[in-house]
Length: 115
Image 1 (cartoon, rainbow, N blue to C red):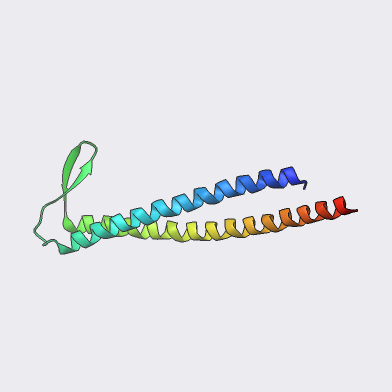
Image 2 (cartoon, helix red, strand yellow):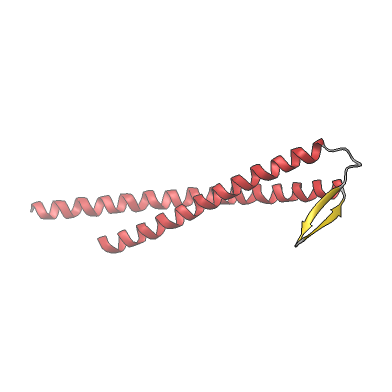
């Protein structure tokens, strides 16, 4: 690969890495929000009325149903975060490898100029 192709691939990989880290940050925020909701639901008495938003309407739901929904959402978010962490680690390794390749090409180019 020539220098321009490596730089182009580096830029694409960098953007992909940034996209993955942004997704991870969003998932972390969602996890925190849902964990707070879970804590609040755990503070409620069993006879409390719970409503969920369905479109423009508030629909009554049971406390157990709300707790189950939040628990399922947290499980999903945590799985997605794990997947995202793996993707980020892979992207970081790829960027390091490309950086080494670019550095080698630059070093070779400098050596050829000296000759």
